[in-house]
Length: 133
Image 1 (cartoon, helix red, strand yellow):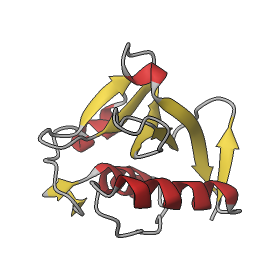
Image 2 (tube, helix red, strand yellow):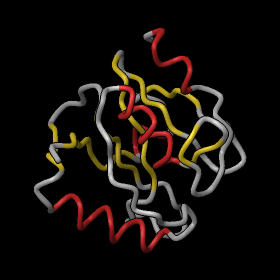
Image 3 (spheres, one colour):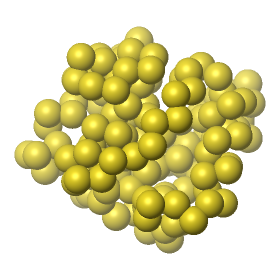
């Protein structure tokens, strides 16, 4: 992992958090993008509101602000479907950092790096998106 991303590992999970004291999955994405000088919009959706997250992800995917990528490139958003009760909903985000790894966080954890080919997460990835504003 690139040394510059180490500071994003171990951030406590906080629903609605947007800083190093605590962040949810969008908060971690926003922190990493800020490292690249990119300010992302804050959608202010609770991380447990899976229907609203899916609706916002679908709206944003169709907007001109986001471009779908065939292959991930750092930094890009990794959109995932991880809710076993509603497996068709896009409800989790991570950020690709290169070397086949992404950073994300889940409830009751700290932010971690995970490989794209991880047995569980590789089957949950919906796509990769770059922010074009």
